[in-house]
Length: 175
Image (cartoon, rainbow, N blue to C red; front, side, top):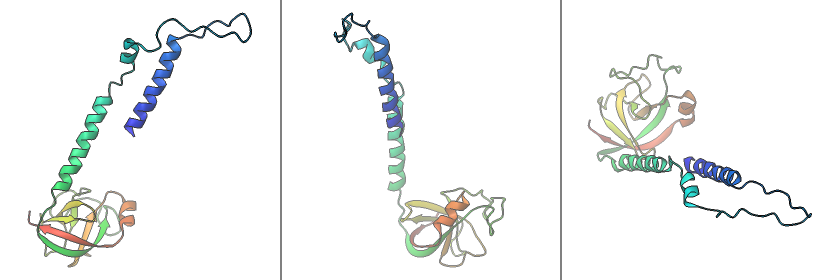
């Protein structure tokens, strides 16, 4: 997205620069006579310098950094006990969850991290869900969370409802 905007802005800047450097020639006296072009070269080194995009290197660096973070996150796939769970999603303020946002372990809820687990899994247990390629931490409990059930915290009620109820394989590892 950034690259497309940069290219579009660069093309527009080039067009404006060319128009400003090469004014429209006076009309020739005879109709149909060719207009004269300026004697200056069309593309000079100073023109090339003025067309550089200062944030292009910065945009490339940030894109490379984002890819590196994804690679690190995916490389950290834990090994441990494998089990199947029924996985649902919840949010603060829905019909079942209080609106204060504090988990049973005392931590604040956080999307992409908080997971409500059955009592058989102690707080701090890391749960990797390969289908979502994400690791969650057991920090919450719930009245509806029985053995074989996990509940992922999401910020948006719409996303939690869209997630629905899924059967998933999980890899469990101690904190």
